[in-house]
Structures are given as structure tokens and as C-alpha cells.
Length: 230
Image 1 (cartoon, helix red, strand yellow):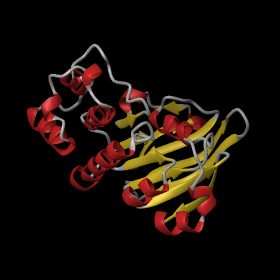
Image 2 (cartoon, rainbow, N blue to C red):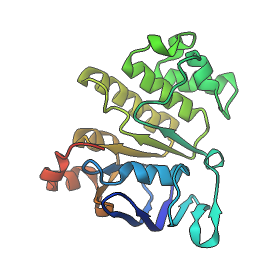
Image 3 (cartoon, rainbow, N blue to C red):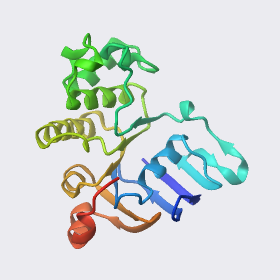
């Protein structure tokens, strides 16, 4: 996986997001204090937000090039996005949510993803009857069934208690190891980043402050590693 973010200049409320970075590790974290611009980065990659200046390229395919007037629509980017709230449809069953917009209609794909995430027994349930951890796994499965070339995860464990966080993190490791879908993972938890990710980008006030091995970098930055928020 190779993700290029170049000439990104996106004005935010209190600063300008400014990025020139290449990401090549399959599972990379965006880490930093609240309001650093992490969710904005995901939105720019997903095509949910436009910037006056940006160049975004994923595996050789240009998704955004403001200088050339190119902006691939979000639905055509082949990027899966799991926001903090999961954004599930409450009027649909779990199965209906999983197959909504899915590019993988085959039973084999559904069986594999639900098997990895251990939600096969939930297919006929309504969203309102699910626990927080179950809802997050359904949201993750729906994103995976869109056949993404990159999965964007915006603090998927932030609203869960410690027990559920541990369970869902174990499933994310299975996605990493068995499905091998590249991930860009936003989190404020140092332990999550160290346990799941191969690389971390530390973002502060819209700028990359550090990039490298999570264990070495976050251990060296104890004050930042304890920063709250997304």
C-alpha cells in the first residue's frame, strides 16, 4: 500500500492543515491531541471534504489533484470509512446494513467477513438490539464488504468500555492478519496504536510532528502519548 498526501493545505478553525507525507506501511495510525486535524485527514482521503490545495494518490491512482481540477467522487474511491458512531441504518437488519452498497454480493465474501468478525449469528437482528461492540463490528464488516483498497477507522473503540474495547481490538487484529486490508487508524490510545499498528504519524495543530515505529516513538513522547481526544 502506498498513500501519498502532498501539497495539502486545508484551513481549519484555528490553523491550517499542512501535509506532505507518504504512507507505505499497511496498518498506520494517526495519533495526536483533540482537534489536531486527524478526522479532516480521513475526510480528505475519503472524498468527503474538499481542500483549496491537495494531492491524494492511493496505489498509483490519483484521487484528488486540485491543481489539475481532479476530484474522484467518494463512491468511486474504493475507500472504506468507519466513523466514530458507525453510521448504521437503524431501520435495516444487520444483513441489510452489510449488503447496502456492497460490491461483494457473493455468499462466500459475506461468510468470510462475518466469520472473521464473529457476527454471523447477528445477521437477522435489528441494529437497535445490538451492543456497542456488536455495532462497531457490523460497521467494520459493512466497510470491508465494499472491497476497499484502504480502510479508514476514526476512533472505532472510543465509545466502548474496556472489556468491549479489548474484544473489538482482537477482531481488528484478525482483519489485519487474515483479510490483509490496509488501514489508516485514528486513535487517542497509545496502547491501541502500539498493539495494532506498524507505523504512527503524530499530528499536532495540522502538522506531522513525528513518523515511525509506534513503540519507539510513543514511548519517547510520554506527554503526547497521554493526550486525549480525536
